[in-house]
Length: 395
Image (cartoon, rainbow, N blue to C red; front, side, top):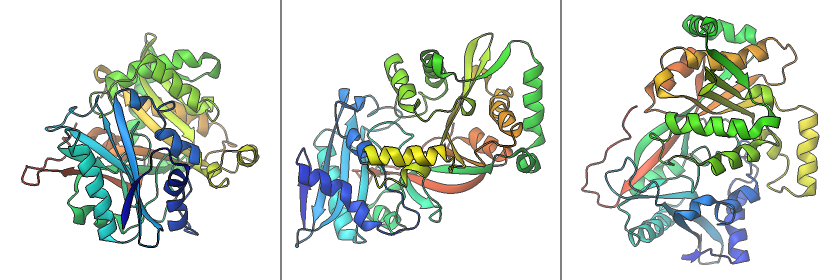
């Protein structure tokens, strides 16, 4: 077996992309991600995390020269020490045949690279970028298609990680629920309806859906809420004005105004409920290629409105307004639009990335009527195995 650094070698880059295509060939639930999405992660011109970090990736080949595994390792200096007892790097984009020897060699390579740069632990599998993409190993929900930006994984990956010594740092739950009002009203908690109604009656509160013509305003509103509601809890740090606007522009082609909602108090942004169509329901038809034919296929399926699944990307309320019912009001602002339209395209929604450490958000997801459809695990490996392992603290 040989480990090869991918670098900029076109052949090695292609092998990095094609390994999962071969591994998951004909798998009923795997959806090939866009090649561009993967390659953009490793391109300093398209990934701003290179400004404060670095990344390397490798492929593993067997004695016949066949690619049998891949992995990446990375460091983001903004988050190395954030909420950590030791400097912690990351590893991700792991794919492998069912062979512990190959998997361990890949993990050893990532560990060695990170140790040489002063790291004392590694989290994985995670993303060299935002937490809303490719974060965590699928450990439950193997009979479900992944949401856009998330990976499907074989069941044997879990023992490959755990046999090496990775320990569960936290779990992430994906909650599924129906959208049509007659179905939701059978399962939603009465207290959610009551809290929402109370907030709606109080002066000063206002809930609005995004407007594409004012995208810069909503990008700033998103940044304002995110940095207060989430930045202290997530290891990605605060987002800048430029980054927030770039995120909104990236979402614009698939953004539907009545899916994305913001809450305000006396015109101050205090909450958001960010929902998008699940792009994977279009991407699965293009085999990873966003060329002219792939774009034509996506447009065809978009115009036919074949996608009935919405994707709850992120939800947040700033601390001083938490626990008042704002979370219920902003969620039902979205729900009411769907309930009032019998021809509403989307029939189900999945809320992605609810950490098990977020007790309030898990409780609220269940109050909305959500049930866990998928579970991911983010693992941590301490290079000094005699050191005490600590799970992510609850918030």
